[in-house]
Length: 548
Image (cartoon, rainbow, N blue to C red):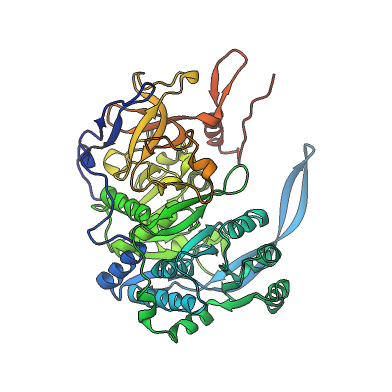
């Protein structure tokens, strides 16, 4: 369990540090404990991603850093699947493929640093330039982290793309930053083969895993000028280069670490520009809020996409702390998803897991259907991502009394840092205290009656601070839009918040989800969805308003 602290550990929670500067907006609030200065780093001297890696290797040495499991086989099973078609129940046979996995194998912190150096030197041998943008289109794994850290080490910017991104989205994330190089997995090469001819700047494809010969032949045939290299070959290329070569290209805090492409509900994905200073401030925030609870002998199971800012920041923080991280797969988390072995959770036995509301909703329903089956999770779970503001996964808190839950609210643009609930003030009616790296003010939404003069104060949440992006990649139209970035540097989130008496922030609406009915009343569609989804026999639901 998390170490206990008194309920008043965080004092007043949040305090106003500046009065209202204009009509229609509130004063500015910060976390009470950091009211005089926003957090910019976890420790003095930690300014970049590479600083975290170097510190971890120096401090934690040969201890276990990253664990992984190989796929050693597959098992096919035929199942009878029931479907409802035109109101009638039908049956069809479907083949399901299950993985058989090895035991966890490990890299030490020193191993991680050495592998990162090899990859970085390999990239330099390919003449990857400082400030150039390379794409990481891969599943969460140690290799994802190795490659990201290697880019960081030589001041090369990485653009992240979800491994579930479709053909159009992937093409956009490669073309907009004019990528010459992409890192991917063997399983994702077929989609990349379709996209490669549409990306004229692409010259190098680095892959891990073991693709079929036909897949390799296919991508090579798609572009004759494309050089396709395995990650092992890149590391070998790097080993032939002097270590000093990479060390001469170390980044500064003002360099762009990554362009994180959001999945985006409409239109092409937007690239959020994230500097090293943004990431380090976010890591510092997590460390301030949870550092007194976390120990080096904790274990963390990673399975969210590393293209998701929450996962990326948390893994950086745990690398800094020296925590053992095991990499799993969403498809192999539980025993029912694998054959001839145990699932990732039971095999790794993490003390900490982090997920988004949709995952916890699935877990809640699974637990409720098998109440007498216990799991390996013993310590904490963290409820994160944007949709937690309305979801809160009703009923999950009642399922496992021995587990400590925390939740938070953030977005890619804030490096996941808007508000977080540390265990001392845990509750299920708010999203938390202001992150130590941001300050918050409320902007009136008069058409819906949300005003900073209400009791309690309400309005659109606007954030500013060292963990908040300065803008979107090549999108001056958005960066100069005052409905997104205000003149005084605040990012408008589009979320409607409310300050509570204990200094915590609650999210009560989403501006885009407010629908005005014919009678003039506003309703929040997302709130209705979260209520309906808590019912066990509802798998998913979409609430919409009609014109009549």
